[in-house]
Length: 89
Image (cartoon, rainbow, N blue to C red; front, side, top):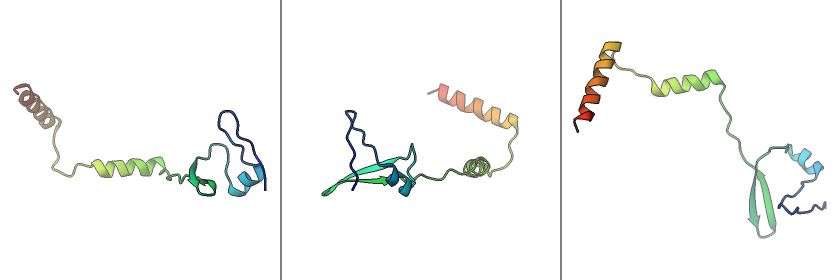
């Protein structure tokens, strides 16, 4: 059994041997659960971030327009009509 102290700021130092055995490095986020026997520390599962090209491709797929091709003039006309419609409320 190893002992540690609670600081005036509420911080506890986890012994180095335990941190190394658990692969807990500085910045590791831990969930704290209160149990009948004391406190339980569990590392928070980190979601894997997709590499930038795959992330951008996923966004493009979500917002992709699959309708007919529209010209800039068509889009401008639609915007002006909608602005007029909203202005006449």
